[in-house]
Length: 345
Ligand SMILES: [Zn+2]
Image 1 (cartoon, rainbow, N blue to C red):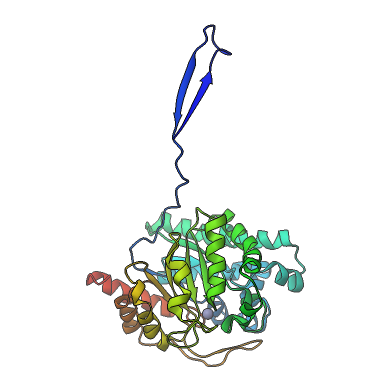
Image 2 (tube, rainbow, N blue to C red):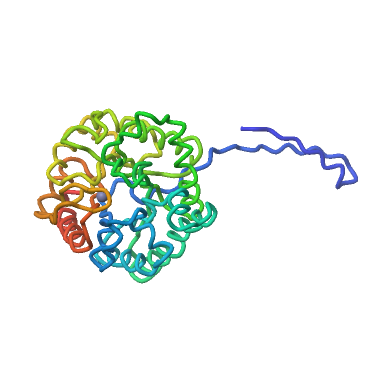
């Protein structure tokens, strides 16, 4: 509490001293729409676009991010498909947006690129969410997608994290900063720190969040090479530690991993089960080949038992990543609603 004295004799005939008590309250964190409730996240936006006929994006150095500039209506249509499928959270199409990438492949200035990021929220997702909330009463959140540094190198390094050996935490923070800034200003409900290949990049993002975005929430999700290690090689249970210790991180977990690794990965996190809910959104299996796309035409199957297993192991947000489209998200919605009816989540 701070005491301030103001003399009012400037405004009154008589000299009066007024003492005002000013209570300094720390800036409140944004209300978290996701506390304690099981939610369905959307699927892989790029994969949805490919399924909708935009197959050239798989070999594009900007991947689906190019369409932000060239065909925003196609992106909005894909968001709408996930919304209709029953997703509670929609991610922005900003995973692979970077100032360097948009300069090299679209000849856009940094300022224009940041504007593209903001419009991915304000023009593409927000109007859909607001319309849905108005018409149905459903509460839908917007997560600003923040992919790893490797995702913008167009060399598949988000699945190895090789660059983490030569970059510092500070360099990673500096690189990520403008994207967080743009998404925050556009009014996302949270950041999605996703497909993070190693502990160092997770630490950089958590530090940036704490130091420069104290009002924002985020989830922290790693990609993994087996049932217990991140793609870069640390134990997942060690890599999530930075997120576990941060109040602004709502969920920790994994994404863009093969579905058959998920149970083992979640089991490896059980020591934190009472501290933080988990988030899981696998791909449908297979491996990403730079410049080509996914190497196998696999589909996520046995969705009901998959969702049930995730919930049993502490996941509160479940969705899909690459090659998971609105069809599978709809099946996840149905599976989760069944569990809710039974009181299992
Ligand atoms: Zn993915």
